[in-house]
Length: 111
Length: 108
Image (cartoon, rainbow over all chains, first blue to last red; front, side):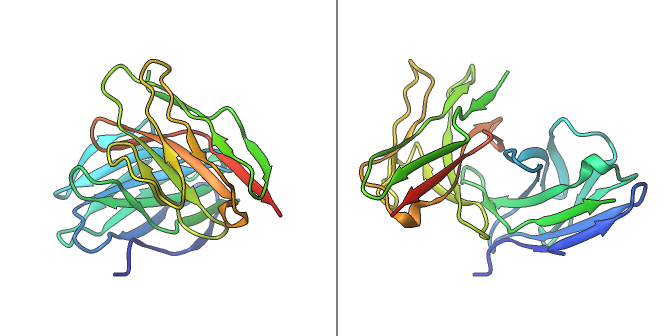
């Protein structure tokens, strides 16, 4: 079982650019959540996808958007990147009423 | 508002000493709480879930609704316990609210 996989592992972008991060959930999981972890902070919930729809959203601007595909994999898109978007982006997958499992994350640096 | 507080950024103990990592929460409903652990260069891993009442790697945590706490305890710390520990509250069934984490350092 590969667990939750994320790509890429590291990414460097310039302010104003757009970025797409990818996540494959743990086998058998149907729900994908995205979290942002700034340096020295705990992960912050961005949004969650289930049955290809955004089910919940945290306190993040519309520049953050996502998608879930029929195979349950997911993408996180961030437009108009700001320096403050530099962080570790974590994907977590779960089944109903089960604890989320996390991937290794994508380290995004915005310069 | 829902909130998880971990008051200690760093906790240092010697091997064999007892460990208690503190976690307090603010939530008006019936809480579901977790402890996640992140070892160096590894992903966040689930350590404990309060409804399962398991003991994992010698760690236990009891939910105290009166004190709104979910402290993580281990009677005898091991060097391999050195890691970052996060307490988290499950909100609206699926959204985890994390504390800022406590780094545990266990010295030989």
